[in-house]
Structure formats: structure tokens, C-alpha cells
Length: 90
Image 1: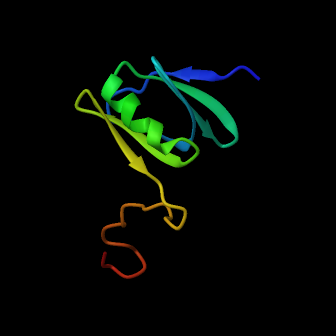
Image 2: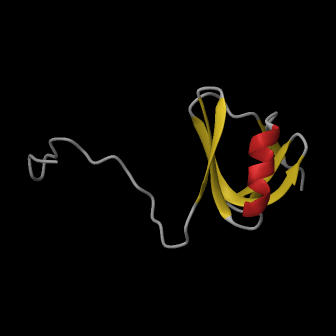
């Protein structure tokens, strides 16, 4: 199956299982589909190699790539609703 290719825009993040690291980007599996994320940052690519086979988040912010490992027991964190209609409190 051909893979989709993306270039992360500012403030954009991809989260998925890191399958491969190349000289010009990485392959991340998102919802069962491989996606090639183009990255021209040797330092980030070098750091990503230690996370092969693991769930990672790659965020582009301020022209830099930020990498985080997603732990198996982590759930999705959402911003709490301010002034909820149910309680009137956060």
C-alpha cells in the first residue's frame, strides 16, 4: 500500500508507532496506515532512532521538532472545559 507523505506545519503533531528512520524523514504508523513524515533535521532523526517500534509524538514548534515517547498507560489528555454547564466550575 502506498504511504501518505506529510511535512509537519508549525504547531502540528503526529502521534503513532515509529516504524523506520531515514536520512530525510521517518515512517510512523497512524491508525494502521504508514505515513512518511519529511524532516530535514539530523539531530531529531538521530534522537528518534532509539524509539523505533514505540509510540511517539513528533511536534513542530518554533521551527524545531519536539519528540515525546507515548507511554502505554497514558490516555489522551484534553483541556478541561471552563465553566462547565454541569457544575459551573472547571
